[in-house]
Length: 349
Image 1: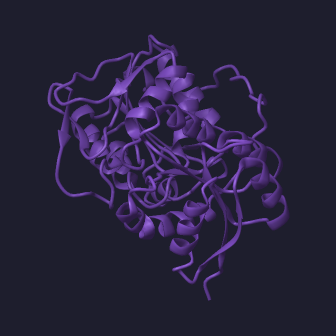
Image 2: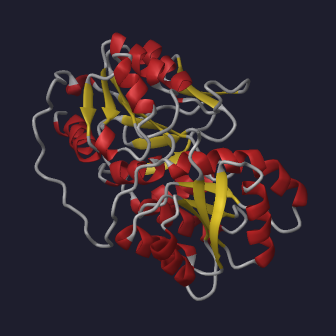
């Protein structure tokens, strides 16, 4: 028998709360255990009701979704799904800040005039709620940031001086980890960086802006025909598969989703194995499913270094787990050790 997922809905609109309740409770495995109209009420109800997960609006009176997420993750860690409109850029930035302090994932919130859109997101919302409710959450105390320790030995990686490209794939739980990694990389980094982050449509451009606001290295959306160059991070855009072709240039490919996603980590990783041989590094981070596992194995077989994020540091130990089981990972590392390894790429040159 499937366990019931108890959900707390937090939104300042009576109508939105009712729409969400009806959508969610159309699935017998989901129960709305409570509703709140602002962040302050949400904090109280999380402590009282102990829901399996929270659906959190961002813009609310009294206390917004970011402040509520910060308090919940500090004192009563609970998986949180943010609903945010891509039309409000300030709200999207706040959404990514909420992801950075522990929220698990984000979905676009239709406006009240988009009745058809609410109906369309019903099945996606139900799938997302079930996934997020199973996510691993950690206590996040504001300001409790550990400084990066001195660089350790590079472990089993013996050819870091040959690394021309670091290729990163991530899904659920990934935005905050990608931010932590890229924030540690210097502006004159001695390799190029490519990122595929599975994300709800419409959020990737703002994700890139958010990363760029805090990172020293240059970060931008990948464009057709763009050169892959050291000291620059290129992020795969929505709706295309991103690959690297001959002469180390970006190509954006249309067509069907791979592993039910577009862009796919596997598609990018496969092109890296073919184009870079033993001169790259593949890094597979937190996420649901198996995207990236086969591509990471191809990168390893080409002679390049490969890393899977460790279980204890993952929000969702899905993609890295499959990669490890398939023998794709040379190293299984925490986020801090991934950062150390990437900084070694810079230090050895």
